[in-house]
Image (cartoon, rainbow, N blue to C red):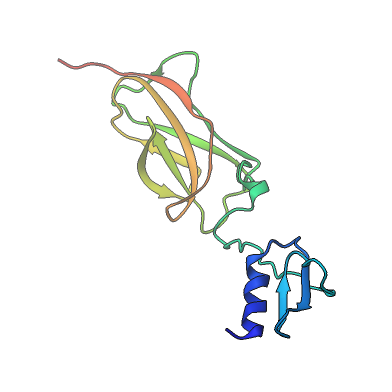
Amino acid sequence: MGRGLLFILLLIALPATAQIYKYTDANGNTAYSNQPPDGVKTQTVELPPLNTVEPQVTPTSPAPTQANKPPPKAYETLELTGLPTTEALRANNGTFTVNVLINPRLQAPHRLRLLLDNQPYGQPSNVPSLQLVNIDRGEHSLAVQVIDGETLIQQSPSITFTVQRVHKR
């Protein structure tokens, strides 16, 4: 085995903090060791700093400090209005309109989408007045989302309300 290869193997095998000694053995060959041999003149080998590789962060993964932060709000105000919260909503045919209070104004290409009982309801719209049709009587929850395609940008707090309608027999 060549002396240069032996030296490289010693460098790889030894811990980063180990000291390397160079000396001439009894046969006149240059040798390297991590411990100086007794009774032999040695030279300390200065090792270059070790190369280090920093882990790469992919653009899609959040930085560790941002992992627990909620995404920033695109809109200062996003809430539903026009729903009674202390009494039942009287809608004999189950049809009624809710308004969206949003500030600043809805930005293109964002759309508004209702969530009725935690499920998307109707088609996304850019109009802040949304109609619900033939909603069953009883208790429901309603929220509005701002979306960009299928990406959720922001969601309003959910409002619980009760629909009261005439039951025809």
